[in-house]
Length: 351
Image (cartoon, rainbow, N blue to C red; front, side, top):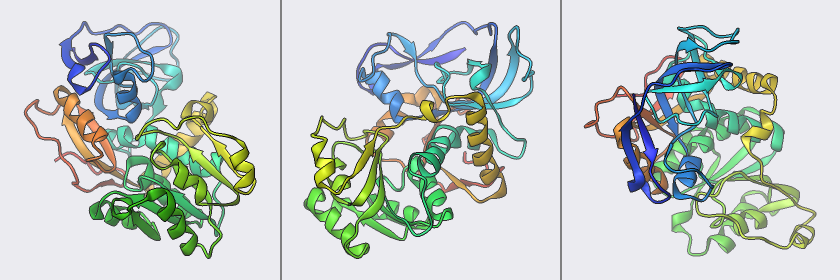
């Protein structure tokens, strides 16, 4: 089978398409033909060596596909089942072994590429909006990277819960996508001379001087100061990523001075800590997708062989929505960007 390996720590050029033997599922495992693999910032962190990894390693942890074999002791799945996953190493591949306890059943009404696109980002958006800071009717929310995969989904979920959502983006095209997802106000930070001072002033102007109840920040270093300054008294800064770099240590006394503020650095594993919680969150997300109440935008699809191009696009902030690797696409195919949403249960986002 073909896989994408990171040969050493470094930039996208360290990714290489290689042939490896087809794996055999062990006890409690599934062998899955990959329909699509999700491309995420954590993959780039592992590739680059920000997070320690062994090299070479097969990249990726997210995807969806069809079960082809089950290992001993597996009772809940059988060949032919459609599954998704967010935590199975080696997912940039034609086939992958997925532990049965992290496999998520995909309803027949949800296309497998849509399932791959909504897995990690949909579950992340869900826990952020419903658990880390449970959005309440009337809340003002600031969400960075509003046209990103999590941003578009979290905006929709927060609006469904009665919030007013303010987002930041980097282009007017992304602003249009964010508004379409339900954002009431969109700030193009590329037009600001000083994000740290100007964004909080805009936010406070929009909120009658109060500030927002919560900031969902996946950007990190470049936005952290502006995020903290945009909060209302007893507001919460939810830092769930670092696409611009990691936030350096800071004095906790600043939370006191800012108005008894809260900050947290959550991760999905802690909000899907049991299988029951994983399946409950996934079933809610898939139900919204199947009903057409949650639009899942696939911003780019790349053939497996062009994983390096997918990483370049993601790190260059040239994408909106979800980026997928599709093993069945021909190696010479172009990545498809900005081609609309995988909206609803069976829309195929590929060209």
